[in-house]
Every structure is written in structure tokens, then in C-alpha cells.
Length: 348
Ligand code: ATP
Image (cartoon, rainbow, N blue to C red):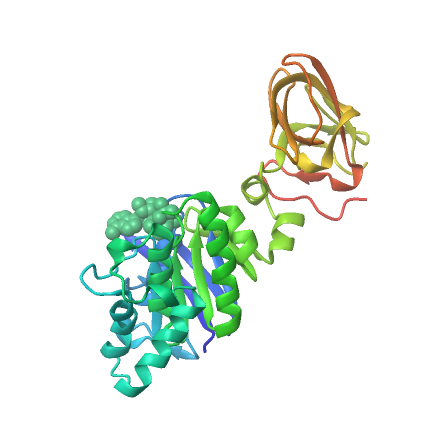
């Protein structure tokens, strides 16, 4: 078990900087998720923790030891990637045993460890099969079992579920979280999927262009976003961001007019989540551009003429396309951002 610390990590590729002065503390036993769009530096950060990539500047510290000069294989981290990378000619049992053999675990101890790891991912009945005779989800679970079998100090997982279909992803998510809680191994998990991040993480690190945008619990990140990037990345659909003008306690934009704090003045961006909008209110007028029933909720897209606003409406809400619609905003759930996209806080 181990804490991890990144001290002012930089990764440059020639003139391009992939990771910019990143500092982060990951607590022992924590499940930390690195979340961000493609190319934001998530994988590079993880590879520096693993020892597969050398930082250009800064220090990687695992269990209070600077590991910059320590080889990947001596860092006691186990990795799971999106490709399962199982050995096709070995049975699942032999695949799971492989890291135990590499680490010289005594033969007599191996069987119990292998069976425990396989049970943990519900593969106990599949140990004699070869990977080719398993489904994608079973193969991914076998790869997980192989990573957990030797109880490393740290798990590193890079989009381990991205090859799976939506249903399997959801069940694997639960399994990974359960397993991490049982094993209590510090885990760093990379994804661009905000649902995965929200459901798995103790804390989420949101990255963009090689920089940390915000670090916080899923509740912090959802309820208290630091800037428009975070606000627009989290939520499904994400927060509506409406550029407009604040004056004398009112925010206005085309089709939008709502009360705002008196202290606000000039160009600002209003943020409102689709779930905090209600059909039939006073704050926004437009037409129904899209109506998408999903069973438990109906997604309504309202067109104001210059922008589209997403609304989570009741499950039985229906409207004809292009019919007029009015929307209300929950006044307690409005967010305001300045011209640089940073949250404006402490307004009265
Ligand atoms: P994805 O979700 O697409 O995997 P990511 O957030 O994991 O993205 P990284 O793989 O960490 O992104 O890459 C960060 C940036 O560094 C990208 O812009 C990428 O093009 C660049 N990069 C990564 N490896 C190299 C390399 N070997 N040489 C040059 N640039 C690189």
C-alpha cells in the first residue's frame, strides 16, 4: 500500500509540452481518476507514475521514495490497459499465474492466490479455458485478475473498459470499485468518460491541455465547478453555458432573462444544468428543437435562435418539434463565470 506524490512534473516532447507543472498527492488506498479529453496528458501522467516515461522535470514519489531513477518493473505497480494483452496460448489460470512466476512467488502459494483473484472477478469456472474461448468482458476480467493477483502497492488502469459494450462497462465498473475497496490498493485510473470517473472515484482530477483544471470529489466537481471547462465536461448532458450580460440584478442573453446577483456587471457566462431547468417557467423562451424520450427521462433541446439549451424533462413530457417552449431555472442552481471562464463566487 502506498501514497503517491507528483511534484511539479513536466513532460516535454521537443517543443511540445504534454504535461505542464503538475503537482498532486494521492492518498494511500485512494481511488483517483484522471479525467479529460483526448490528448490532455492523462496517459502520459500515468506512464510517468509507472516508470514507462521519464519526466522532463519534477519528481515522482511512491511510498515516500523518489522513484524517478527506479525501473518500471521495480516500482511494484500493476497495470491494466484497454488491450487485454493476455497470452493466447496460455489458459486463464496460467495467464493469472504469470506475474507470480515473474516475481518468484513460492509455487505452493500460487494456487490459492490465483483462485482468489479469479473468484474476485467471477472467473473461477473459466480457469482452464484459453483467452480465445472467452467473451470480451471475460477477457478483460482475466486481465484484471492478473493485475490484482500479486497485491501490488499501486494499480494503474488506462481506459480498461473502453473495448466493452455499455452494459458490460457498467457491470465491470461496479466490480472494479468493489475489488479496489476489498484490496485497498491505491489506484490511479485514466478515462475520458465522465460517468466512469464520477462513479469510480474518491477524487477526480480534471485535466485539459496538460494542466489540472480541478481536483475534487465527484460531488465537488459536479456541484462546485471551478471553471467553464469543468462545468462543460461533467454531467450528462453537461451544464448549459450561456454567454450574456449582467446589469442591475438581471442576466440577459437572446431568449434568456433571469435574476442574478446585484454585484454582477458586464459580460458573464451563466451556467445551468439540464436537471435544474423545468418546462413552463419564465427564464427562457424558444422552440422545441429535439424531444428524446428515454423511458425514465425525456431530453428536450430548446432552440433560442442563437443557441441550444438542454433540459431534462419529465418522463412523460412530449412536444411537437418547433412548437414554442418556455423554461424556468432553479434560482438556487445558477452558476456564473467571468470572461476567462473562471467561476465567480461569493456573490450576494
Ligand atoms: P487519450 O485519451 O487520447 O489517450 P491522453 O490524455 O492520454 O489522450 P496523452 O497520451 O497523455 O493524452 O498525450 C498528451 C499529449 O502528448 C498529446 O497531445 C500527445 O499527442 C502528446 N504525446 C504523447 N506521446 C508523445 C510522443 N512520444 N511524442 C510527441 N508527443 C507525444
